[in-house]
Amino acid sequence: MSDEESLEEQNLINLVFFHKSKLKKIQKGVSAGKLFTIDERRKLRKYGILIYRKRTWELTEKAKKVIATTRKS
Image (spheres, rainbow, N blue to C red):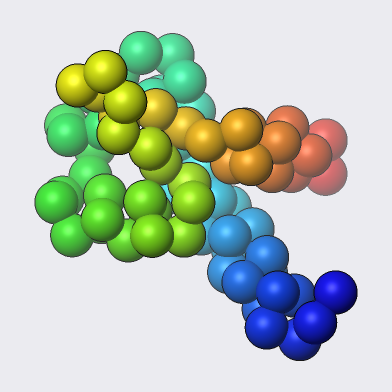
């Protein structure tokens, strides 16, 4: 893994950890639009945490995996 990929992966982990409580609410069905500003949603989409699909915001599989692994620690 290159340094750039490693840095991107760490950014993803840090963002997920920072927003973990809100991301868990999205998993339970709460609208991301009620939890995050437009700029925050754009940032989370850019880093591969959120995806806009079928007129709703969802967590990516990558973000779900990070939440699952951070839940244990």
